[in-house]
Image (cartoon, rainbow over all chains, first blue to last red; front, side):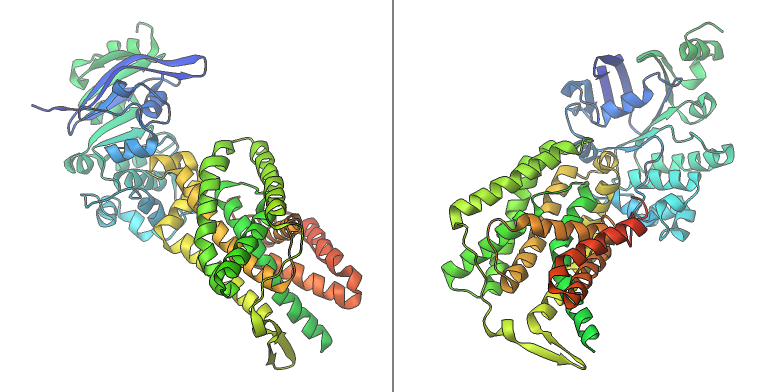
Length: 237
Length: 287
């Protein structure tokens, strides 16, 4: 029986007067992949910002392994065990590839599965480019750095926000090819995607968001095309 | 031959200006904070060295070693409890706060030490000189330049060879993403300001030995520091050294032509560089 590692309960989020999330409930099971799909503006990235502490939320709205973490700051959330691959990769321009990866291990205190050597095994191209400025790499390679950087903290939960955005299909395939190894390391994964097909391929569980609410939830093989279409666009197919 | 000597003296003077500017450059490079109280903090450090040297009967060099941790703590506290509160997208609040801090420091020093000029006495080394081929240089100016180079090398090593330096650069690039990586930007800023205050203490040591100082001379030091930072390229440490030397050489050449032109020549060099290279001589690629 897999146990829940991340529980989100009745999570709301606001940007000033604008309410972006309305009572979101989610559960991520240990060593599983949860895909959150939805169109632009559905609230997916806001959900990621709330979970990582960029947006404040009530303490018990987000629990990691039973511990309330909703009130924590981003560095504290990382130390608790959640790291994120941010939308747009957000590499540090003045740092080399290897330095970007090392920044991911900034607050790490002990040993863990993910080391520089293992990141280079996962993405061999990065070893050849390790002295290059992070921003000198192609989009796909930058995404590999962003994923490697997030893994360097040895997270219990890895959040991936729109990692396929702006990348060629063949590059997306290469990046998602790394996911089995990430799960084997013991990490549970949340993937935020606009690409429904890709999300259904990698996920054990899929949630669809629209206008700040979860509109559909289930295992990929339980969800029909029309149900996903309705939940994604808010209209019947 | 006299021109070579003049240029060498200018280069040595540039070391002092680079020391004035290095702390300013460090703080600006990491948190984009323009500290209008920087000159007054140099003067404050000089008074701290003076007080320690006087109270314990120490040489100013030893007193500066004791003053450095005091100034580090002052910088850390200043950043943590004052400047971090006003840092943000709007550059005006930190400007106003550091301007106010400048006024507070000047008046506090006037209350505590009066308006009398003071000087740090380093003994016979102040008059010592070395003959280097065709030119003779003072030991203290040479020591000032060597210290400036050592400070720049040390800061570069810190920036590019340490975990803290990585955190400095990552925070400078993108504080929000740095936070997601476990870096606490406000702590990073506080440590950076503490380190800048240690550099300020070194600058204060050489300022106090070279010339008289009183509580009101800070703003003029700030102008030299600003000019050195801008000539060198904002946030570039080696550029800051180059900027200090440009001002020092310009002042020495101006003074050689007419002593009244010394200060003006430095400012003219600054304006000329700004016209020809608005981003400075060595701008950071990603600024």
